[in-house]
Image (cartoon, rainbow over all chains, first blue to last red; front, side, top):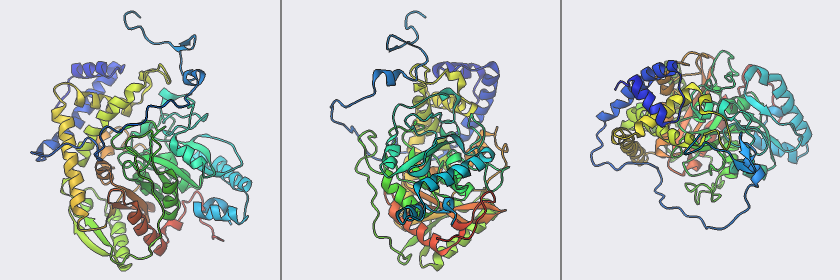
Length: 96
Length: 455
């Protein structure tokens, strides 16, 4: 399975990953090699086999909806690079 | 008496009997770190202090007010506002965080070379890798820079560096230890465990860090308690998987492992051959499951609440995010992620069938001894193969112990002991009996010469 450079660009966009042109070329090659390798799974007979997304069958583990002490606003904001009036500054959704 | 060579249990005993003070203990380790860390690059940051038992924590586990980077430039300057549950639990046992250890960026790597802060060196030979991803945690214990350390194991990141650096490493069962406060790599595989100077120490640390905290829904009702240690291998059946002794296994390593198996047999255990026929698919399944989960987990690094721009991710991290985004993308999910999840079931069933015939499974932890720095740095597939014997246990969720069992080409070889789900007790028993009957764990790397012990 060979990945084209356009596919690499598309995947990088989905992953929100800024890549240089050099990286696009490099990853097209390396990812193709890895995909070639994982393609051997086709040989494994999985007819009628249930998938294991997790090894322990836990479903819907709940916890009580109680209020607990949490970080202060200052603590929560301490590692943000851009903040204003006690809030995180994020990228605009409708405008930059 | 050389304080820094003592095991955790010996250190606790020494303190209790006033053979040395906590101040002396901390000073001794501090000196050792000042002397050796510039050569080894095991610690990214150290914290001064004179109280408590000095312990090293992998930099992927967050520590309140101590910078945590996960080996990545994207988290440079990040200062966590709280402690991970495992750190909190250790602090209740009079443990002091002596420093944060170097690791492959976000735990992605098998050599320690993917750290944005330079590679950690192997104390047995400074031109070799120490294994990874928990490179600094393995080396900190191997070179006596900490009494013990914590690492994480997603595909072998505790057992493989333990093997290459010559220390004890334990990956507990999936769900045994809460991962609250650990920066997630692949959530269906990640586990936290200790690197120690003895098997008994690993048992002690597991008791301290295991059990639910209400914040990791996969960790419920899983406290590990120390039972009476049984001092006999009689009645134990040791499974030898043919698949762990095939192509790719270095001859020197194979010889050392077979000698260790012979020793275990002499100690009274019965050796039985078992089969794990789907082992050959483990790496392929893992490199679909892991990158897929990585692409989801690392989406949180958006540079808004913490960290910087995503362009600051290193090459391997970008590679795995790309791979995972692709395998999860529209049209490919069934071919890749679903197929890998089914193969994962087959690998889990392999172990279940094998454990009908034996109590533990024994084999190598790594197909080779430590390799040269730079040797596999730009060949991702070659690097991935170095985890061939550790990955299956993560896919199946079972516990694995690695302990020193000899040398090949002057470099340490580790014996891997795999157990049934939630049966750390038996693998620790087998490991401890083997350890007591051999001298390998007493060997020290040339950087910290082995001197006569007075304790």
